[in-house]
Amino acid sequence: MANGNNGASAPPKPVRCAIYTRKSTEEGLDQAFNSLDAQREAAEAYIRSQASEGWTALATQYDDGGYTGANMDRPALKRLLADVQAGKVDCVVVYKVDRLTRSLFDFARIIEVLDKHGVSFVAVTQQFNTTTSLGRLTLNILLSFAQFEREIISERTRDKQIAARKRGQWTGGRLILGYDLDPRGGRLVVNPEEAERVRAIFNWYLEGEPVARIVERCADLGWRKKQWTTREGKAAGGYALRKCHIYHMLANPLYTGRVRADGELHRAEHEPIIDERTFEVVQEKLKQNAPARDNPYRRRTEALLRGLIYCAACGSAMYPTYSTNGRRQYRYYICVRSTGAKDGYCVTRAVSAPAVEEAVIESIRRFAVAPEVIEGCARAARQRVAEDLARLREELQEVNARVKNWKSQIARLREPDPERQAALGEQIAAGEARSAEVRKEILLLEKLRLDEKALRAEAGGFDRLWKVMILEEQIRFVRHPVEKVGYDGRTGKARVSFKSSGIKELCQKGIAG
Picture 1 (tube, rainbow, N blue to C red):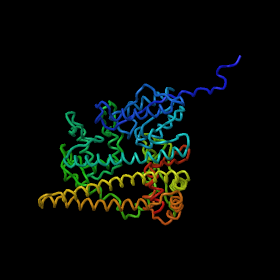
Picture 2 (picture 1 turned 135 degrees about the vertical axis):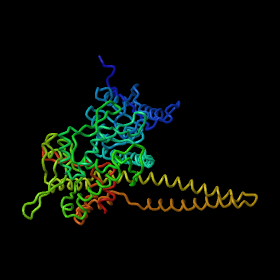
Picture 3 (picture 1 turned 45 degrees about the vertical axis):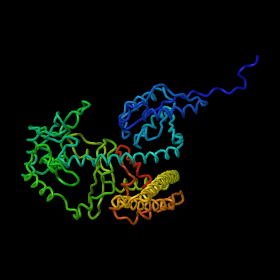
Picture 4 (picture 1 turned 90 degrees about the vertical axis):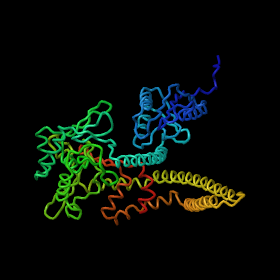
């Protein structure tokens, strides 16, 4: 007996699609059709276009309205990842990549979860294939632009905070020993018991006590860093005081009832704990005890990875130091936890500075000349230039239209109106000046060469450029692409993490010098 289905193709495997939407602010969310609805509608239309492949949209909604993309602390995203781990999702669909996240680091964590559970990822307006390494690279480069936009927003927020500090307001941050947060509003109030401890530390330093001895006295008395409870009810602070904490306390102008804003001190709303005269004397003594910038000791201990390298075993920072044997000097990086017995020793002791620095340099060298990096950077850069050209040409058209309109207004004046003519003349002059600027920008972008051959030639000059750099230039250069360096004393290996925003800069600017 013949099978009725003989020759017919098997139905496609069902693909359960979860649509994720996000909007940074709550503005407009109360409208009948808002940004989240628009994102969902576009995603649903895309899923319907793939119905022949078995794609269906899940009824569960994953909407984060009023949540930033700078971190993963979002309820709908957490529910989505939980459903992915539970095997309820086959594909995650978003309108644009930056709706999922604006952080390259967070994106890598999300993709790792998706890959682990065999879940694919689709951006409706951007075609990507996350199953290939080149697709991942292209996606990461595009995401670096989204992170750049987020950093611009952060700069604006920082400007607002500076303006508030200039008015003497407390703009938040970690509480310091001696002050509590006023429950009636965002301002500092003096904690009498802790204030006495702060005054004692200042007095000990003025009496000539070394900072290391002050740390020991605080430990003997059970004095620790400021401890408080966060809004989520978690305990924060309360760690043992170290030398860096004492130095920071002695140099903190908050204790004098002043706040620093844009490099200047301003009178604050909170009460002082230390009088200004005492604070000034302490600052003078700190300067006398600090090594001068032209001190040979300072130059010898300067290091390529200062501020970048940390201990992967315990998460603490590592600092540069050296030892001598006759005339020969040996440089090292040491974990700060390995020098303080009170909180326990770290398994990582010291690592040869030249060895770990050469490993980092080699990582940058391989990264810069990798074909997929060159190709991905060139493609992303061309796309960015094309977008900028389209924007500039649209602006040029609008400016020229406005200038034409202002000129016609002058021509249509029935009676002489000097004031009106002067105002329109100023607008026309400003418009024509802007038009000339835009045309120059367009001409520069049209002449810009952003192909793989040009970028590869620039990347090939890495060794030549590195050899002629002085140490200060090398330090600045490394900080462009490298975010941090983790050294694990248990395995003797170093891991380099690159900044998302440093990819394009390294290939287009840093290598070329």
